[in-house]
Length: 294
Image 1 (cartoon, rainbow, N blue to C red):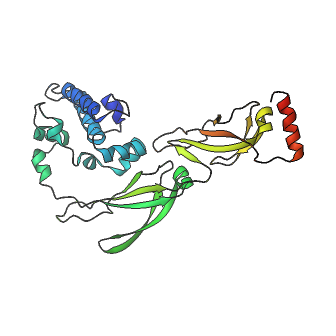
Image 2 (cartoon, helix red, strand yellow; image 1 turned 90 degrees about the vertical axis):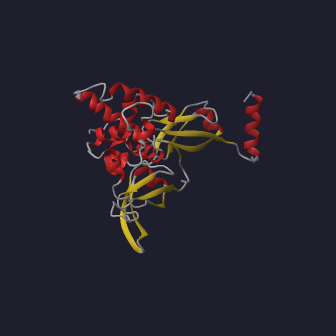
């Protein structure tokens, strides 16, 4: 099946609640059910599409992976068998008719139905480990050498950190979990990303924020100054009369999130430095300004 936008497939927004997802799925499942559309290949494809979308978006872990890495990145980590593993067809089609076994058979073309799937060898357990990366490695992507223990043995491998991963993101490494006790597939290893804070930047999704302080005179008269970005310094013009706390936007100087082709923005928050002490000359000048209403 071609890759589709799961949210568009169900006709919901990205922030839809679990109830909204279920309502949308059930409405479409009734509409495109094979019993209502005999010998209709387009309806059959749509039926499979909405089942796949709901299997992912109704599972919190799979949904997080999809939201983090986008459709392309998600499908590099999950096969169709992975997508439907653990999906409760009985609950999804409760009171809708057709039977879970019949639905599963239609989707996968297995004569044994859902019962045949349940009798398959059990998959090995998944493992998790935390991987700490710098702010810039997370924002721009990197490659890391990791070491872990599996089956009592030390293993090492290189892992690609996709550009734009955020704190708490998970990276799935197929087949590096526990082996199956019954001859089934090996489990997976999930790397939980911990991003170290950066001395210059803070982040909100794809947007970056940086603080810059200017003098009182510069705030009054305007000034040009260099500000840091992930690609190096850029010069900006601060307009005369800027107020403390004003943010200046540098479009496209933020982070490109996984699965997106668009970079976020960089916001420079302007602060005004007030000196704690003044020498005699400075004090006199400030008093003159005060006498003129400044």
